[in-house]
Length: 53
Image (spheres, rainbow, N blue to C red):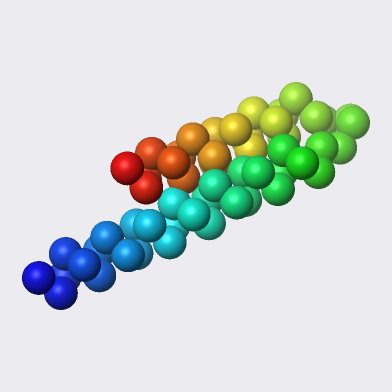
């Protein structure tokens, strides 16, 4: 039972970190390569939310 709870907490932490990283990348867009950063940030946010589910 401890393994299941540990794994769930670990996945939840990774999901939150990926979501926050994606959000920060989208919010700090550099004009030169903004589309690439927006795509990477969006992918990180989606991965974070998928890991949380």
